[in-house]
Image (cartoon, protein in one colour):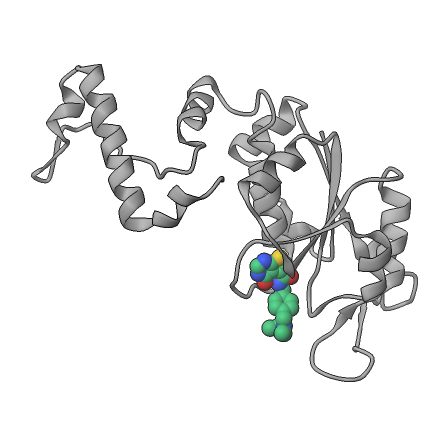
Length: 225
Ligand code: 9D3
């Protein structure tokens, strides 16, 4: 899979996409992630990528020319382009799964008040928000999206990690987890987990997951992912 990211802040992506499971997926050649600096597609002395909104008002708007040039010169023709914006559809696991099934896609990160509407109209195929809270730009949302997609690529997770995924993919919260020592500062791990009775252990985990889901996220039980 190929993922292109278009941003004014390419350096923000260095850390999160170069560690852990994403790092390993890139090293294994499962995904080719390319970061593009929109500002490299400006041509004036001050490398101006944004400007004041027509009609007045606060904030700055990303200019159309550098975004069009970046898309036209860096992306393969016809690449599916996702724009990260507070006005987008809320991100869900179903959307992540659909993107994970593509051969390639690109992500445009807004900053400031957003991009010139002509970019949206002419270039953008889908608009996604990661939730109802205010961030400073689309870069962190883009990293969230890429992280969630890449972990689904075949071979990205280890065997243990993938098995886990099977059992908890279906709209239920996870059960509590414990590891050694059995007793820590007077707090004991549940006896059932130390019992070696795998039937009892599975039942306890199911019950705990069910209880937590009812208490914390009853909305999850009435919906398809
Ligand atoms: C109404 C005035 N604006 C500032 C308060 C709106 C606004 C513009 C740009 C608010 C945030 C942003 C920057 N955020 C994103 O680009 C963004 C985002 C987000 O803030 N929350 C959740 N998902 C996303 S995806 C992109």
